[in-house]
Image 1: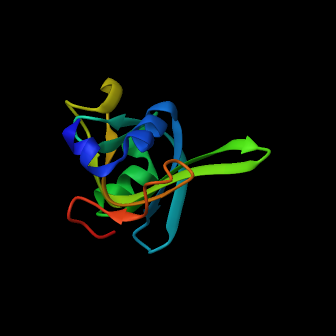
Image 2 (image 1 turned 45 degrees about the vertical axis):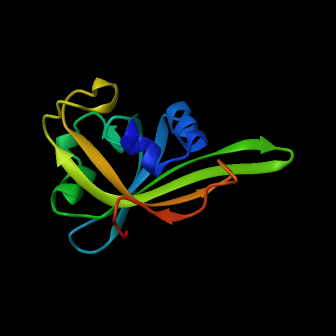
Length: 139
C-alpha cells in the first residue's frame, strides 16, 4: 500500500478502486499505436495496474508489451451531465508481460500485463492533484 500512496492521492486511489474498465495503448513493432478497452485491477501492494483478459498471452497488446512497448493507460468517466463533469487518470509507464503472476491484483489468473506508473495525468478526480512524474521515471 505504501507504493500506491507514494504515487496516487487518496481520491485517485478511491477512483481506481471504483472503476473496472480502462483503455490500454501500446506500440506495435511497426511503430503504429494500438488502443484496447481492458478490464483491470489496481495492485495496492505494488502500486501497479494489472490487466487480465481472455487469451491474454495470444493478444497483440500482450505481444507488444513483451517486445518492450511503453504504454499509456486511461481510466475516465462522466461524473455528471449537468453540470458537465469529466474525470480522468492517464497513467503512462513501463509494462511487463507476465505469464504466471503470483501477486496479481484480485488474484487475476493466467497471463497479465502489469503497468508500472512513471507519469500520472489527473483531472476531475482530485483538485489538489496535478500532473506529475513518479517512481523516478519519465514516460
